[in-house]
Image (cartoon, chains in turn blue, brown):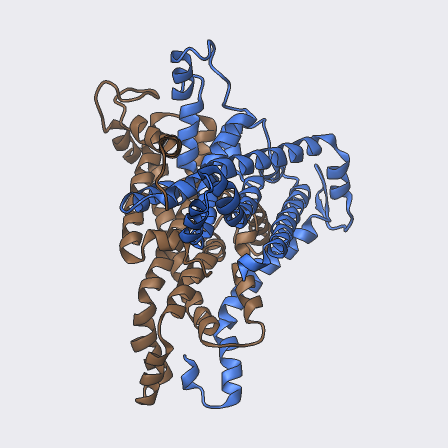
Amino acid sequence: MSAATDTGRSGILSTPYLLSAPALLLYAVLLLVPLVATALLSLHSFGIYKGIENVYNLANYRDIFGDSYFYEIFGRTFRIAFLVTVLSALIGAPEAYILNRMRAPWRGIFLLVALGPLLISVISRTLGWALLLGSNGLVNQGLTAAGLISEPLQFMYSETGIVIALTHVLIPLMVISVWASLQRLDPQIENAAISLGAGPLTVLRRIVLPQAMPGILSGGIIVFALSASAFATPAIIGGRRLKVAATLAYDEFLNTLDWPLGAAIAVLLLVANILIIVGCNRLLEKRYAEVFR
Amino acid sequence: MSHNGPAALLFHALFVVFILAPILIVCAVAFTPLGFLSLPTHGLSLRWFRAIGDNPEFVDAFWASLWLGALSASIAVTFTIPCALAITRYRFPGRDALVAFLQSPLMIPPVVLGIAFLRFFSEIGLSGTFLGLVLSHVVIVMPFSLRLVIAAASGSDPRLEQAAVSLGASAWRVFSRVTLPLILPGVASGWVLAFITSFDEVTMTVFIASPRTTTLPVRLFLYIQDNIDPLVAAVSAALIFLTIAAMLLLDRLYGLERLLVGRGRD
């Protein structure tokens, strides 16, 4: 089981492959085969009376790219993902910095408060927002009591509601990412800047922000990718009519039963996701090569 | 390092309210004595928690989720341990590619996995079965258990294993008496994290669950899509309490900060 137990050279070379073979086999059967089958399925066609036909063409992709209905949904998906990413950065990054400046035990306690919700079911958290944002919910009651609005705002079944709830669901990931990059920050640099006469804003802008930037950007990639493919939160807050890419794929599969079209949407979602994650990470590593080393 | 000013503390207070508000309101509404959604301003009641017991669909789904989480976490950890030892104890060609491949389910949107498994299971005759749920959950929890077991294995000293070998222990004996006890805390936390991930999974599972074999989050999701009442608040609140209990356990076992933030290296 360990390097020391191998005496022959061939033993040393083959042991790690033997040890990882079961997991690799599992992934080959349960990950590669289903994904390749989905890609093939997306090339099939579907008729209401004929079901799935075993032909190979790009008709489903042509349908998606030629129909303004799909543009609207993909446009909404990316608009929501973009807003959630910006909001998470604007709220999560300062909060990570504030947490980093706290003392024990507050630091540990509030880090748990900020990150703990990650482990709580997305359904429970989204249900909380559905309760808060309803027309009789606490948010509308509070705004009315404060005299800010005269009629309840419509958060449910709106993009605003989806953005608020998704930001709540994903913001811990931004806090984690920025927190991790702040851990590498040497507090003596801040003190050096202060001793050289820099004001607090200058320190923040010239010292802290540049060093936190890789964390904000890599957190942004994660938040963007996850909100673009989010399902449960948009489905509950957005209702059945306000669709995003993931809920659209769900409807095609389980309501319309057009599996090939649903598979094509899934393939596009996967490709977009991988392009965004890999592409942005590449850019990030090039731009901040010295930080990642 | 300077202190947080009043503006920073106000920002922090608003952040904490934002984070906790939806969680607290679910717990509050769950204790309402009234028959409709309301805050328990006129006393607390456990009637909606008792009502869970009268709804076998939620109880059955809870047990299914529990078994599903336990089975998929156990299988994933079993596959993960030899893999993590290969990755941490050996330098071999393709090692980085292996790690990236094993972490790849994290990059695939759960919707895509749900669609892929729905098609795959219907082709091989596993659609709507509990076995299908277990197999699909093993794949999505693997990266989580792998990360923690790798961290544990790279943190343990390989010289202890070499000492055991030099004293004549067989490979299996070295593993069972030296390596495994050393990495056990990491393995246990990898199991718990895998369990929580499986227990909370809804997006992929909603595609492959059938009305007869379904999980608690999926049952909740489908219920909430039709109507929201104090019963779902009570089920959600019970879930939240269970999660907090699991979090405390994880904190004892491994340290939550280390679990959630990592150690900067991986």
